[in-house]
Image (cartoon, rainbow, N blue to C red):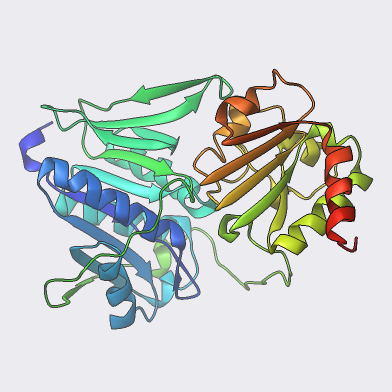
Amino acid sequence: MEEKTYKGILVIGEQRQGNIQNGTFELLGKARELAAKIDCEVSVLLLGNALNEEHGKKLAKYGADNIYLANDSYLHDYSTEPYAKIICQFINEHKPEIAMISATSIGRDLAPRISARLHTGLTADCTSLDIEENTNNLLMTRPAFGGNILATIICPDHRPQMSTVRPGVFQKQEFEVKKPLKINCVKADIHKEDLNIEILDTVFEKTEKKNIEEANILVSAGRGIGKKENIANLEALAKELGGLVSGSRAVVDAGWIEQHAQVGQTGKTVRPDVYIACGISGAIQHIAGMEESDLIIAINKNPEAPIFANADLGIVADANQLIPALIEELKIEIP
């Protein structure tokens, strides 16, 4: 590897139906932070159809120095082969030292294929990224051994250094755009024979599910809630506070709440203003998904519960007694 030929940080963006996903903006902010340490610029590559100046303005606003858009009718809906082909061609030409992609369903499908074709390493589902002094190695930290430890991984012998990052781990940051917007068009050299599948139709699920990643207040249920019927108390409290109900993997596995509301290593990463943990013991797998919350309030009848080590306010009590008492005191109606 001729390491000196590689320079800069590339964020591989993601859009769906023309809407840039939040994970892309989160990565751009972190990329700017890392770029300051290795004195380089941040580029973003976005693939799609009918991408335009408005997309470029948003990407610049959230931290991109260089914006590259690839437009083609074949890129309207995500398909592995054409996306992987264009991205690999781009990386081989521009040689970024670091390449980052959001660990969504698309990113998790795309990233390993890119790294394999480029003969470089990939660290998946990172929760922290930093730069090692003197080497410019990317320090990629992720949970390992079932979430019981955090492993920091480096890729010293190959470039680009690649990582996927779960949405919600980093915060979006807005930056002052100091130079005129310039959008670089990337030729999408895609032909029908490059497609190994044909998308006949795209059907969108009609749902009223609310995204816990965007909630300012979460009332979260753990195994200590005892049974599904007790979730109604948490729903009533969450509604009164203007928040949503979430939960640990244990309550999802028990069928008490749906999987889309799961917080933790195998669920979603959240950072609300207030996180109220009700009957949650505080296993490291769960903590990994909510430790960046501004205010953590833990309710658990076990004074030795690990959750208290991460809580700003701890209440030693049975949540099934405390929450109903609070609802009665506040005269909250249970749905």
